[in-house]
Image (spheres, helix red, strand yellow):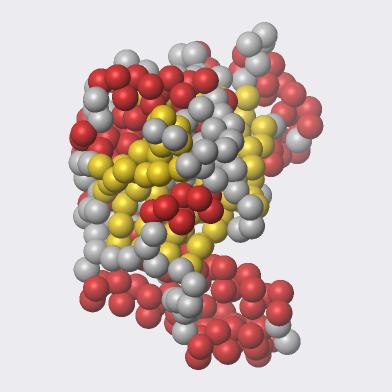
Length: 382
């Protein structure tokens, strides 16, 4: 679409009632923007919690053509609530919104990083998000019958695991739509322990990310919200998952399970039961987000393309230091590229979470040590 493109930077709480209606009308009209992350409710709740939050209003020849909620970390620009935001892009009329490159250019900054961009983009890394579509005719039972036929051994194993869990620990019960702050804190504690075990950056250490999940769960809206699904065996918690939902879309977000019960696949059981119970409540699209975890192929029958990119201001060096880069190169070209991408993603998470320079430095140092350790391990085994 031709015409002069401009941007106005505002606060998210400056949106008028008409603008909020326009925003959600645009997201409702475009199936690519059906995720809860594109709802104005998510942006405004996140805007009240995330440090450095702002709103870009794009206009072409004076006419509004899109909204992009974002946050600033020094000179870096990221989607609102990153790294907690699985999908992002400009909310506007299809075919008229600015491209990824245009957004980066107009917002300025030293770096513009996205990991799940939906919308027009060139370059970057193309990826896929995975979803389960429940048919109107037959509902969950029809969907499950088709998946079981396609992957019989996998689902028979999960059915057997559920029977084993019930026999060993007691009856298995699942609740969805739970809004309980204490339960959310318990889920966050499980996730933090998982981050420690796997040497991943603890996204909840900074505080504001925890506040975001609580604020989303506490919000009262007709067809937008957040809640917890919980699976209990013999009355004791085995797995939980925090999810977002809007309209007919249900987005799995933060899963956690008790490690001692891992052999029973409680997380997989919880996903299956969440789909079944959610379908009864009218949800038809269950979103697993971006990423290629192996289990997703057994559940998902719908794919949506997304873009991952880091656009640097000309002349700006990468956050990856020369010494780290040279060590990673010892792992071989292909593996080194994978490790560089992994380190870049870790850096994006750390930069988004930590607004304090000392905490940011500690996180980056740990991420670099993990990457170098992996590279040296690969070199030793070659």
